[in-house]
Image 1 (cartoon, rainbow, N blue to C red):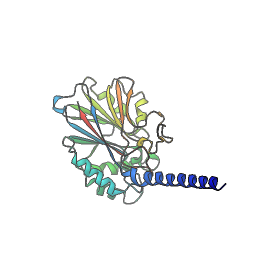
Image 2: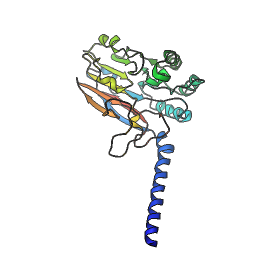
Image 3: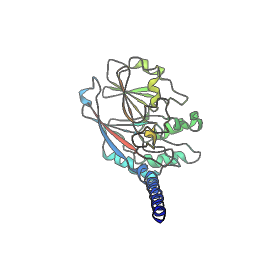
Image 4: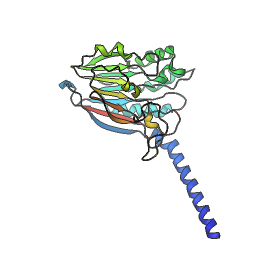
Length: 279
């Protein structure tokens, strides 16, 4: 009886200790343990001037009450050290709260070094404030980051050394109008699309586009049990977790896990900086 009691007591203590260790790791370590992912980004017809150039993608900073400004500042300094030719930000700059939100954005983005050729972005759902509908919140945010060298593409397109870069506004927001820009894309020339929410990839809006779509939004699920899909994922298409996906129509999707978080907890879904080599 004594041995049995000792066994159960030891087992309970072991389980409790393991739970505390996992909880400590998920709250204090992984949310700030950034993974730097290196990948090729093959683009058909890419101009020779862009071959071998570096495109860095970051996403989902969620500047606001849940994410530590110092962590984001240190991460942007890390991005600056990479000296990217192109820097893209795929939405959710903020988690909106009334008050000094834009002061915090300025404080963080003071440490951004723009890409040598361009720094481009799209908006995410959180950038529209509560209910994803507040146009004035998005407009003030766009004006704020513009002062730091960030051009936000809102159903618009720009060309960088012969590469068309299209920015589609957020799928959940009030300005998801890809039909305003997709007909203007020269589908015979190289192109790349930025679009925060990967569910937009399943909408009938892509016409003849073939190529890469860079997204964020999912955070990789934030908490992902080993060998299992994440239980919470803010997309209708449950296969859109993180990483690379092949789509219909000769399209390819990459979902960045983001830097910030909804709540300060991550497990098996580290925050991410993605370094693409254009080829």
